[in-house]
Amino acid sequence: MSATGWIRERLAGPTPGAVPGTVTGTWPRTALALPFIGMLLVVSLDYFSNTEVTVEPALTAVPALAAVVSRRTWYPLFIGLLTEAAAFLMAVYNEVLGESVHSATVFAIALVAGIGWVSATLRVRQEQALADAQLVAEIARRVLLRSVPDRVGSVRAAVHYAAAAEHASIGGDLYEVVNTRHGVRAVVGDVRGKGLNAVETAAAVLGAFREAAHQEPSLQKVAGWLAVSLDRALHENDHPGVEEEFVTLVLIGVCPDGTAEIVNCGHPAPLLLRTGEPVRALELDETVPPLGVLDPADVSPPVQRVKVQPGDRVLLFTDGVIEARDHRGAFYPLAERLPHCAVGGPVEVLHRLHDDVVRHVGRKLGDDAAMLLLQYEPIVPQLPHQNGQQALTTG
Image (cartoon, rainbow, N blue to C red; front, side, top):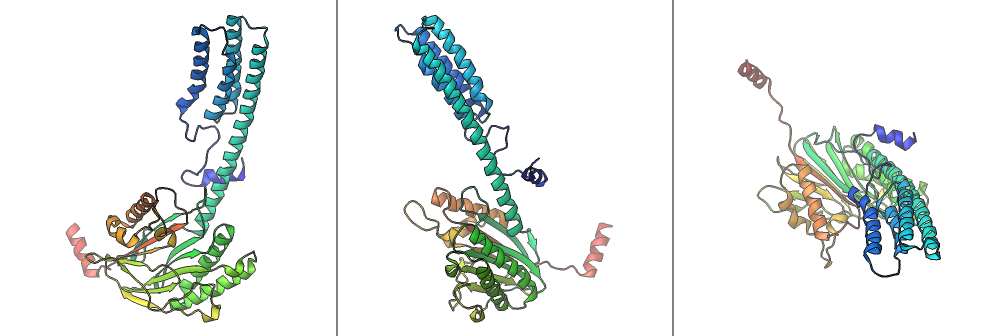
């Protein structure tokens, strides 16, 4: 067993890509009957036609069709043998067994069946390589972008992430939520560019956040820590265009007293959704450039403080959501559509939002899109006498 196969068996849930030995893709199992139907049509046409011209050469299309509708490498060869038998019977019936048209047909059927076998074999290998690559990408995503639990301290949280790269599950967007002694802290960011370089940069920022969020009491100092780590990572990963790389991100901290602290470095402003009020963008009075633009020593963004109430929801997102365009070029109106999708828990809200964005675009999103929803629901501690009354009631 290969290493990826061993990992696949130990990972919970299905893995992307085709599994050898199964019929996958756009063709259903009933499509395996198409070569037989084609063969029957050619034989019937030859039998019931009154012309002296044989249609035996049309049988060469049958093994080609078998290679298209099946992932089984033996199927084109099997259909090729049946087609050769049909060609022989047709030649006997038409009394052309010794003529060149029959010989050419037999040779063409064998050639097409062989090409179909090679094509099916190569396709299976490519699908397996793609499945292995998707598995590696999924493992990397689980390590880099960890799953967010439903409850983190005083908030309920949910995340939805969609990578723009074809057949990939990870890109340049980043997110994280941690529960610290300073309260719940979260980050959502967007690395300029795509590919492995963007993933490396996102990994550096996330690693720094997971450490700084616990160590620094101020979000302003957390942003400075991230700027230093990003600068070091960009110089260590020396690749073309490193001087032009930067990261936009927003930091948010929800304190135990219900105060939300926000630091924004060139990122779209979070949206506050409160029952009975219109959606409000938590804009900062002072514009701060993304990390990587200024010298790390000059990174000192202001901290905005907002009082949140139980049930308030704060949506953090990347520009892949608000820059999604429809066929007319209109951007997705996130602030306008958010109240219509804000039904149910955080997970349901983000699923509705993503489906709404896809409907707006009408196709797969062209950029990475990440959304993180935090719903403030503080845990009310029970007093000792309440526990005693509950025990007496139960008794």
